[in-house]
Image 1 (cartoon, one colour):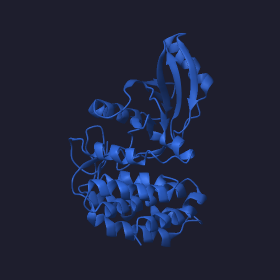
Image 2 (tube, helix red, strand yellow):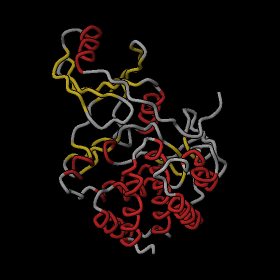
Image 3 (cartoon, helix red, strand yellow):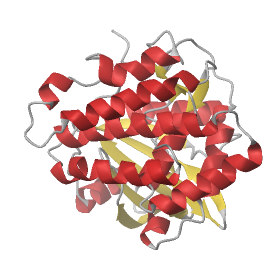
Image 4 (cartoon, helix red, strand yellow):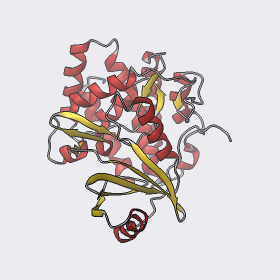
Length: 313
């Protein structure tokens, strides 16, 4: 089987709470209680419940690759990072299911929805901690379960987002009526400029850090879930995700400036810019392919706010 260059998004299967309750009750008996549907997952359906008083989460998906990566991450780093333990992966009809421990706390998105951005330094801390974990294998980009990735260098991986058809077929994307090629060309040129500052170290990345995948409790990170996109590269690709997807661009720019002044990382701003431009291209492509015209058209304004806030222009 050829090595994946990038996980391909799949449609979410619409299993409802009743079917999930029936499955759990038949499999584990009448000790199942307090089942609730959880939001947030883009490609899996999730429910929390209690089994004999223990709080758990079950997720359903058409593929098990993400569940396998979650178990892999938990086995590798679960003693050092707050990764919920995977208890079981199995098959249900034409779906896969995964049962994990339930994480306490609220998601970063929950905080953002209250205009609370106090967790930003915690997110930067967690990314720094993840990046220091030793990982076997070779290559850059999306990691398989043997810790190998498909690209020979970090720059090869960065260039692939716009310079090849490995990840996106931009010729097809440009045919969409609301796509602005002049904007994506600009972003790609800025990415190429700042990528020369990237580390040549093979750093571990979560790959989809923040929002619904990070939980906070009592001013600390209580859980990091969904390791499907775990990869190796420059950790500032994860930093770029946090900065770009925070809805308050002033707050996130100021938080990044304050954080990296204190720990004095060389060329942090240039590397953060690389991460931002990289995530903009990825997000733009996924939005275009998903028919999300609003997201595509708002990308320029969001990016300009960050460019001004970080003094990149």
